[in-house]
Image 1 (cartoon, helix red, strand yellow):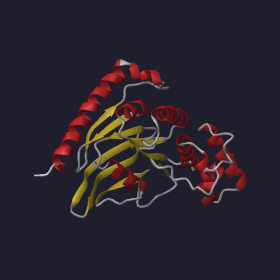
Image 2 (cartoon, rainbow, N blue to C red):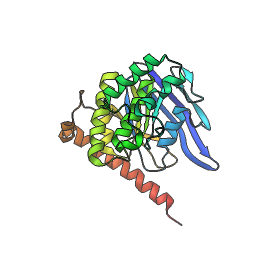
Image 3 (tube, helix red, strand yellow):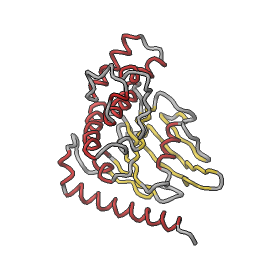
Image 4 (spheres, one colour):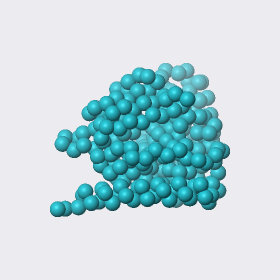
Length: 259
């Protein structure tokens, strides 16, 4: 299966600081790639460059063979903060991109309500974000991203602000949607359990300046249930990744130490 996303020699400097050293990554259709690494290693920078929200100092990103130079409807972005419009209802938040695209109102509502059903928010269409829990707000944000029919979902620690139980439920919900919708996903996380459970591939980045130091296929079948976390294959991969990340966290701490 060919790549739909190609990252070639992408580097990012902020003044004199090299945040991301020349990085290559190929993403196939329907891949769910989780990205791990210490704080400040360039995970979110790489994601923002793929989103077109930031620009590389060197190298290029190609989506379906076309160079990424700006944000586009072909990439749906979900952030850790819920980024909903507080003055719009849940349904109107999900419709936002459809309004921008000029779709007929009846079609907007049909698409929005279908995705609100997929994320378990049927019956909450007329609520405002402040009336929802954090998990429900993030489900709204995911429905909004999916409603635009993007080629890829780009997710920057989307469950990082949620409590443990809600986070686990959201992992299962998103994985179920991915298995049904077959979207291609790039998913940044600090959580190794989450990376293994969610990903078809796990990428580990080095301490700054970031680079991809490890790219592992996750040998766990789909549909993937929560019970997989107790299997030897899960435990072995988690142990390997934990050690790889610990090495990079130590390297980052040593680099930051005075003198």
